[in-house]
Image (cartoon, rainbow, N blue to C red; front, side):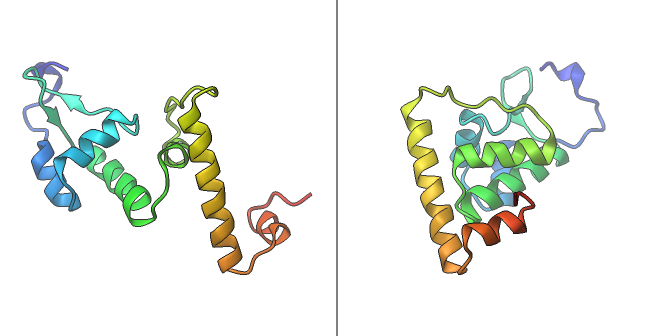
Length: 130
């Protein structure tokens, strides 16, 4: 993205500033981008820049991935539904995606059992009861 695409009065932050705001290291933000959770805007010098909307998105990513310990695939689905954006998913034949689904489903089951919910209780709660 070239400099002329950014207005002179637009407030932009660099990755170090954003990392400090979020309480993470810059490498974490780079890893989120590499995982496909967002795409950073870039200046002509190829440095990442972030506006307030980007920071709000990254706050959600941090909350879900770090604070709530949600995996990347589930997080992509959450962001897709929250933002209505088309975030690409891994190919179906990708073994890491299958492993993540197994891991995620076991975490969901563990949490459901901690709360003493049956599958029927859960389906009623999310409106998917038959």
